[in-house]
Image 1 (cartoon, rainbow, N blue to C red):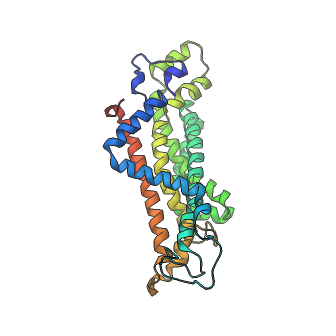
Image 2 (cartoon, rainbow, N blue to C red):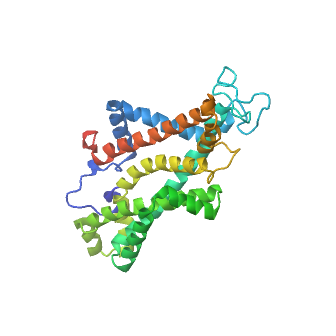
Image 3 (tube, one colour):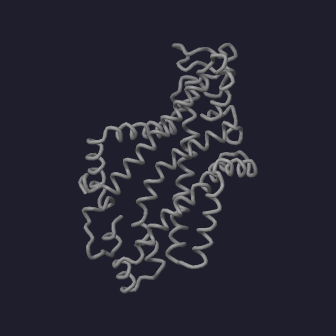
Amino acid sequence: MTMEVLGVLPPDFDDSSDVFTTRGGLLRRLWQYARSHPLFVFGSVIVLVSFFLAAFAPFVVPYNPVQANANAVLVAPSASHWFGTDNAGLDVFSRTLAATRIDVTVALVATLIALILGSVIGLLASFYEGVLGEIVMRTADVVQAFPLFVLAMIIVTTAGDSLVALVFVIAFLNTPIFIRLMRSQVLSMKHRSFIDAARVIGNRERVIAFRHVLWNCLEPGLIQASVTVGFAILLTAGLSFLGAGVQPPTAEWGSMISSGSNGLILGEWWPSVFPGIMMSVAILGFAIVGEGLQDLLIRGDDYGG
């Protein structure tokens, strides 16, 4: 959404440089950027595959991810069980793919909530400066002062280990990041000439804040969101690894790594190694896409801007 669509243009505004100008313009930029950045294509493929598995993995895996086979306990990787089976007789390949639904969905929803809350709170705290802004920023400081993983364990243990609680805990811990990003953008944006022009023509402060300022300050948050998804996956798996997150027999990477870790010293490496690799690849994909979006949105003039 551009400032032209919103109805107010700064004097020096060039609509060809705005990544949100048209859908075709954005797709063209993505295509041109991808042609010269194969690593971005690699990361995008990982992200798309993660989305596909999050939606359809339980329906395409060869075995039921929660149905054990007592006759196939700790079977090494083979043609019938590509990633082997665990100590309960569950197919590791099926569970590794099915776990994408939990980890990626929790991470995406939590990041979306954090992005929305952080952007709105950061906008209000910086657009309406005063006591409210100070309270919000000092609260964010307090949250970020604690080690996030320790704080997450405390909150999850107190609130319960349900998926809903896990989502909101992760969202709560990541919200301060988006508050700070939005605040820094708004402080530099709200005194620009096109904002003053919006006031002159009679727009209310609320309209200016949410119609003109918010949409033109979202780029850093969108870039950060991709990286935050990867961190949220790691946090979800870490909590489950310690028994404070998703509980067995639900397929989840952290709990799978935890349940299979005892067998590593005995040479039974496959129940924990394959979920660990899958989780690492997913996090890597989101990190690569985040870096690519930073190039495209912030330094996008070289890619058709």
